[in-house]
Image (cartoon, rainbow, N blue to C red; front, side, top):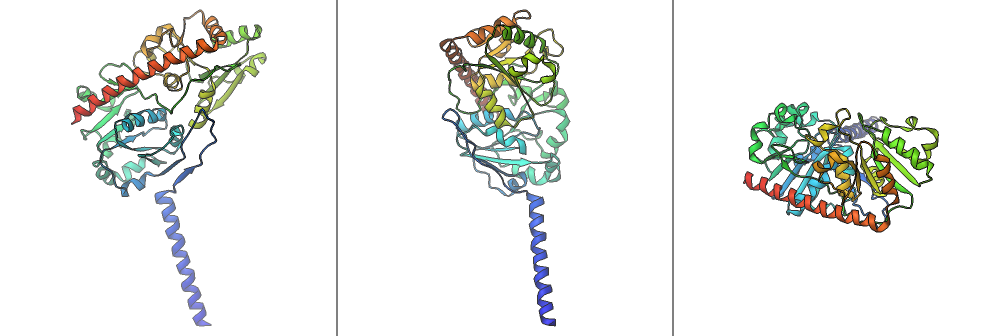
Length: 397
């Protein structure tokens, strides 16, 4: 009996040890995140996505000619596919670090060959293991910091990114030059931006997947974001007029916050608008792909909009370039985004209704012609960006 009890105690202790090891593994390394391959049509193809915890990176071998893309923020991950594509085309392997929500940003990639994904829950992980990360970062050919902003300076310092001469900084707002301390390297070709912004190199990441042109929907669909400090009055006035004319249209509204929502609409327009908030990239891409046009809702005299034609770019332009959706854009912003009447619809502060109506009545052939011109623009921006990337890499060498 005593022998039986002794064996039972030993077995119980062994099981407890196994459980402790299991939970330690669970909490310290996080499980592999697997996202099943989504249903696709012949027009959209996508890869099966999976990632490892960023802690796994510390035990990984880094191949020669590998680039690391770090997205420390919970936004700007729509840029990740574009930057990844540039370096794949240059023959590099690409490792990517971003928040867990970022994994779907690569949903439209046909294959993740030569790409490895690593995710994190807390930014503090990098500071907690700063010495270990500094050692692993030295093995990369180049490091792209996809969002450079002063609020995360401590993380950048803990990783040693400011001291490494192969770090490339992407700035999304010009004010971050001085606040992050990188203004002293603007002449080293290591500061990129998404537009023609002073003291930066233009590298525009507008690739999401291999998107093909297609026919315009019978019920014309417009895509617009719900963003703060934007003018939605012109859209609603135009929608009312078109509704009275029995024009068939739909507006898809997507945003992080309910700045513009169903409660802002009169009853007769509610069936013409769809509202979706805090969607994943998969849902965002599907919504944009299903649309015909993207409304870039910026006005020169509207509060805080002017910055988007001088010092900052709207993500809506990236979607237009990548998904080949002709945008509706105010004429005073068009030049900054390389848009013209050949590939876009330009409105002023008084004729938004007329331009929106013109877009609805556009024939299939005219619509495809706009798309073809967008392809030309997209290819041109790709070449400019690629030349600037090569300029950066040559400067670092």
